[in-house]
Image (cartoon, rainbow, N blue to C red; front, side, top):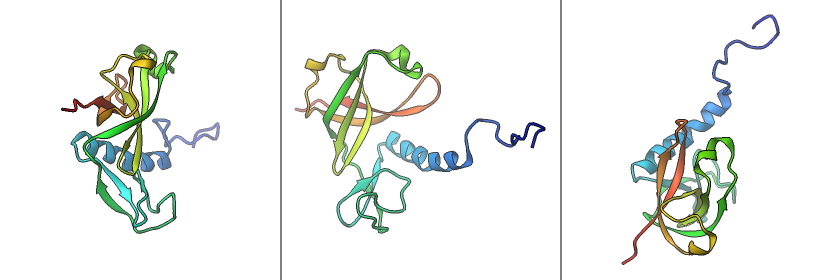
Length: 147
């Protein structure tokens, strides 16, 4: 510990608890990027993202990894015109929620014009992982051409 009473063992500004929590999410992003996305599902039909030890809906500890469907359905979105500093270069952009089976994912909707009236609710999308300029990763949705 330094003279001012602040610990010297944290050099990246991230707590140990945060690193542990991110580990499960980072592994999930790796799986999604490899087209092997999954949800943590309980016997009652609820689904959530890892890391999880119990179902957040019913408290069941009987969780299994269930594959995500390859496509999802756009349920809602918002067009962001004034972004946070991390996303300022991207404005306007679309943040969306898409349903993949029993799981709803939040991500950036790509390959669409960010004009509210031109984005249809119910649009089929696939989920991918996008690496940002700052090195962080995020979920991104891309419309799927339906024959």
